[in-house]
Amino acid sequence: MYIHVFISIDTVFFFIYMQTSLSRTGGYNLPPCHIVNFCGFHILFDCPLDLSALTIFSPLSTGLYENVDEQTFACSTSNLHSEIKKLLDRTNLISAEPYYKTVETLHLWNVSLIDVVLISSPMGMLGLPFLTRAKGFSAKVYATEVTAKLGQLMMEDLVAMHMEFKQFYGPKETSLFQLCKWEALPPTLKEVVLGKDGTELGSWSPLYSAADVKDCLQKVQSLKYAEEVCYNGTLIIKALSSGLEIGSCNWNLKGPKRNISYISSSVFSSGTAMDCDFHALLGSDVLIYSDFASWNGATCVEDENSWSSIVPVVTDTCMWESLNFDESSEEMEKLNFICSCSIDSVEAGGSVLIPMGRIGIILQLLELFALHIESSGIKVPIFIISSVAEELLAYTTILPEWLCKERQEKLYSGKPVFAHEELIKEKKIHVFPTLHSHELLMMWQEPCIVFCPHWSLRLGPAVHLLQRWHGDPNALLVLEEGVDTDLALSPFKPIAMKVLECSFVSGIKLEKVPQLLKMLQPKLILLPDYTKAYFNSLKESVPCLFFTENETLDMPNSKNLLELNIATDLASQLTLTKLKSEELTISRLKGNLFVDQGKHYLVAENTDDD
Image (cartoon, rainbow, N blue to C red; front, side, top):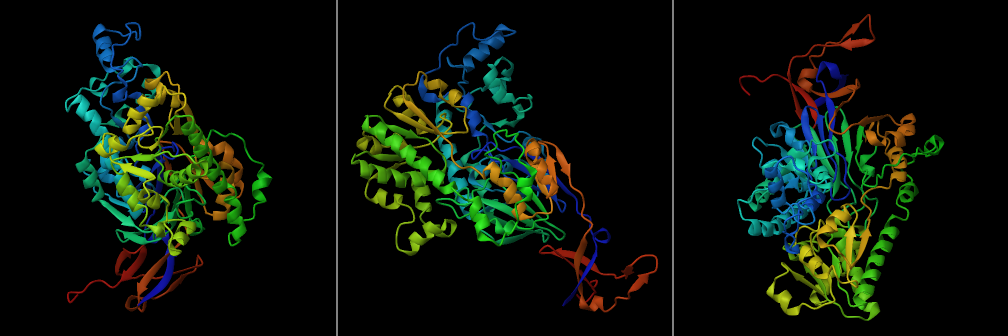
């Protein structure tokens, strides 16, 4: 048995809290990355890849490997000019096996100092094999069960698509990064390679292997939503639904002294994923808010009175529903618009190419396409082409507890959770691992609707199909915002096909963030410095600190009391003495202090008989 007492933190343990932002968010496909020092442990939030940077490389099937014009570059030496010419095609893209861009400064960290890695979404997992294969890496990696599985499939698909480059260039192909001739690159490519401040060259690496992916997954401990796991007897770690994607999460960390919540890209409610669990984040000591996927450089400062008038009555369900107003309906309107434009193209004799990577969006589009095709009376095949498509679609039918209430109710009523299960059985949707599959070639017909990777337009079946259809004015290409469209399409110009660029909900709308933060009632909020002008008035009601990318922010140490559990045999030895000069009662005890499940315990010293 133990007796609970509260003592000054300074007499037992010092808690140092520091936070370093390694990269800001680049939207859904590039979540932010942070390192936090909490209770003496270095905790890394997410390890993504910047796959939009692949656009500087030339795709394989475009037939663009020709010598560039002699006047394209002004190089300091003829040798340099000659080397660059060999590596650039006629559209000034790098015709070499692609390298992959990781978080800018992560490679500068000593990986042996990282204790915990928390993965919030499948996209935040794509760079993890680079980390886990590094010498000295020994951190514990946590992700939800679904994030770990979807991340695995996405990494395996990326490796499979990259093999096409391997087969074309061979194992010993010299790349631009090995030659270090980046000074002579065109300005657009140079900025992608080096970054605006010229410091990002070290972020590029050759892609990991299938063996690296397998080894990486063995280091991941999977969690369920709201499941508590204890790290090193000190930190209680819990994953909470973020609503962004099936399995995506926010994090809550509880130490002996304080708790920290981390909000990644979140959506209040989704047509596929479980709703965001914001209630579990209420009253955090520190809230790291990094969901700025919708940030577009807003500089307007809301009226201070408008924020102060927001009453944080979090028990009122209507308050939470007001934040979610119109979010789901707006998303459904966009999806129906894509289907409508696609049907118009098919009726005109053109095919539709949809190289999207969002699993939730794809699942909803498949359902809506079936309805639109049936209502229009046309017959058009839908092909899904990916090395992991069959496994991924099958997996989505066996995880109802991770889905929104509407999907769960379908299961309980005996209906398929997603329509694609029945559509595949009815042969309205056809799934193939590769574009050159014999079965696909036997049933191929145009016009058709094709879902396939990759959204960068540099990898996978999308490259070959875009080369086939780019000259058809009736064809349609559906892209998601987040990639430089002009650069991505440059190898395929001139383009006659229609291009529909869409934006989907990738996070909480900016105008809703102040209200949400006040409702969560944290004791301290951490925000990126580029949002300072927008949130300046929020500081009047909620303490805020602003962090800068690649700079460490030191947090003030709280002086609140700490709970200590003293064993009853020790507690009986307490002799209290009241100090005359201060209103303070003290006592001296001798024992062993240890931490378990985030709580401090003081027990009697071990004896020889123990």
